[in-house]
Image (tube, one colour):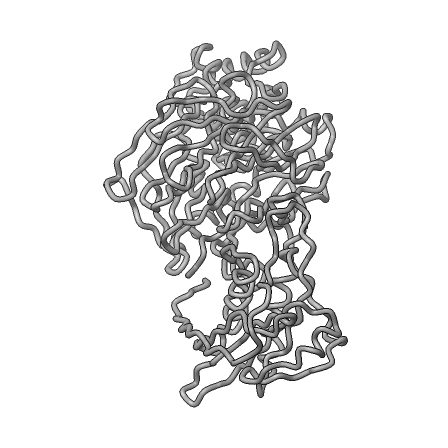
Length: 433
Length: 159
């Protein structure tokens, strides 16, 4: 069980005096295909090797985002810079770095790890940001992600997403007897742990936006129902007392409600359940398959899929079930709609000509863009800053299986997520901060 | 109280029991065919599979019962009416060419279409449970229609 019961203390570093201000270094991410920013990340000065590991994780985070091009260490001229010393900017210009990260990691007498770093604008010869973190030494990996987030935020102007986790379904065994259990890991694939033991089929986990909780579909006692799972205690709780299958759950943005499908006599409709009052509310009353509901980030509306007009299409309704309107009108079928955390886009799985695509459209259905396509891509999940989508891609046949991938919302920078074995149904955590 | 708190270990124990049963009854995962009627006689799972027919198949996205499916289910209903002590779970399944949530709902539609038909043939509704496995339990594994058509099925299993 992965527990995050530790504290991280963050303090800004004093700015080291330097050259006068020049043009501010910034990555313009409004364009589709961003030219990655050349950045040098020096090993953090340390006595025990943790400084090198910190720099490696920071470098990997920045590189995977597609917005940075880390410069190879072998090219560095200056190879060690104390965090309280101004670097030799001329040496960094020579290796074509525009940004430079220096740092230090010290084990203090009280046992805590103190990590300091500075981000430098090489051309302007200026410090752009500097922070120090205090934590227990085993949390060095999380500090690395916090450092990478600070760099990302300073250079892109957007919120970072490196200090986050992904919950997913870990799959093992032959395809006709697949064992599926919930698992959780850092967004970069490290620090993985299994949350359920695989003896009960587990599907579609989704994070709570406010608590260390997951809602998912469990086949416990052969009764497929929506459950809540506390990540830290392992406690489970069935959501509501429904006579039929409940499935496709998600939290409301305030974490107080679950929206999900309830199946009765073969007919699936959408319900909400208030987790405090236990009050349930029926939102759709069609004879169709109404499923995969997802709240807008402001909680006012719900997007879902329905085959009420013949094939799966995407609809939006008010969160009380009124004013239902279809938004998907392209060729093919549209499923698994997920509202962007920024509110402006709906990500979906599209089936067209026997292929499975991941795409985004505006909330009025216009501006459809396909981000990836192939034999089978399914189940997009937004990073908490709305910049990246995780999804799973399944390979064909008896020996095939799903793997997790990420793609930038622009459609560029498609990357496999390094996970051992088969993995499906990814869901991104909120920012842990 | 509508809500029960269950420790993870307890859930694990129940889940394990379910898997042991499943091992006796592949390809069906729900089933209780480890019951006393597992072998011999017409009131057995073996008889159901070999002489009556335990499964029917569906067109893509559909839950309509075709002529062949209705033929099988007429036999199932007769068999159930002759063996009044037997209760069944009807599993609904989908092929892999759909999204997960939709396929869960589609499997439920199929299982209920079978249940409704059996009821129409005089089987008492209380003897028939349904469960959907969506696309989670394929029996044919190739990435071609010849396999997908075998996975779009309902399976009736003695409970």
